[in-house]
Image (cartoon, rainbow, N blue to C red; front, side):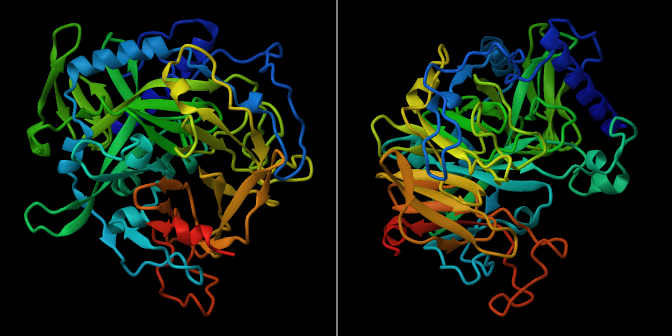
Length: 531
């Protein structure tokens, strides 16, 4: 059955990645299985002799205190050159679509100012977008990172496409793996396959959102479209193929979390928690259904052997090339990874824990862009829940973002790095503008989150005013300069008794859909003016 073949492919891919560490080659397998493939962020394991940045390392100081910028140093991915070759081969086989064409065919609609209310007693935002109901309550896809054309271009224009926003979601529900004590054995049940094909771990998708005027009616509307992220490999038949985006660790559980994304120029940077950054290119968005009719199975190109291929975007159980047919878990568009950045220091953060070490490689929990500085800076920060033996509240630092485009030398954070002033940690996103650092703190499913403001003083971060109550499940932050808004999104969905359907108070009576997901923006002038 298809699910068994997919599961076997995952196991073989993971084994191949493991063998790549030792320099051995994986045995040849069926055509749809990677041959000697390894995820592009995987590098040789760091040893005790790993040298850190010459910048002096700092131990835990205090909330808001100084940390070591050198701990954030990024090295170019060891497989970047090989990845470039694979993407070029994929480009010769699959047709491409630009951002504007993708948005012109956007197939989903935002409902502005619907009744969903994740804010409760918190202040209402200036604008609120509600996703279609299936995306709003999806158990599979969990929204996280946020960026947009204001990050991408200084003039905030991407051709004639108008205002564009992007958010990332990770595949957070895989019953065939999570509920099976031996996930390598057996197939997903029929019920699991029918539940939006949740048995397949799809990795990460990016959603393009566009505010525009309907060409037929002349009325304003907001439309959006999902794009699957992937990474390329060469399979056992020497054919280029691609797979869903996953973390280098195995067994695969939640894959890459994509807690933060930044669109800068042609490139999309995606946070990979324990590794660093993954890089994608807007010029390489592959279109597996160029005629817009899924039933026709459009002709694709030929790989190096000259054998022509077709594509099937109706079958949601497969991904990559299988017997000369391309699959993409049912998505029309796929964007392959073109490069990676890896933390240079040892990764000492405990697995399976929300605590964080105070020194060494950080977690890349979220990222954002600060265009109010010179040069433009990419910010990176950690989600941490401090405990006695791990008191770190999470570090944050920034890089000159243009330096990440070269991929030929290490890039170290610029000068400053700080521990966040959050006593209990829990930062889900951060953004900076005009010398103010904005941080979203999540407080769980039944309590509004906190939007904090900080400024740098004497080398440390200090609070500016009181916390502003915001959405439950508040996530990444994005500064939209042209509209003067600070955007975010909520991640929670209705579900079990502990997942937003119980513990309601008088301000949130039973029946309020306060856990369905929304994108929302507060006016920066309003945020900055709060006491």
